[in-house]
Length: 117
Image (tube, rainbow, N blue to C red):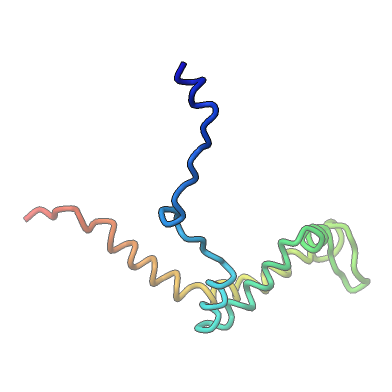
């Protein structure tokens, strides 16, 4: 009987104040990029690389002195060349910030543990 009575009632929408605020990644990256410009270079590069048309083409493209091939079995793979050139950019952009957060995280791991006297 209670099931039939609740059928006609509208579900209450959650209070907007109780919901977590939306975080826009683009704004976070732009803010970080003002402090560390190489972040924007890395972010824009990797955004382009995950695009299906570009990313999948780079997976099968290769180069040699004779030209460009769309076969991963001829010449040097383009994807590996991009990784080798872009990974240092990513590491350079993120190592300082990551190490700061890692230090904070490591400091919180044992903060509640009691050390024996």
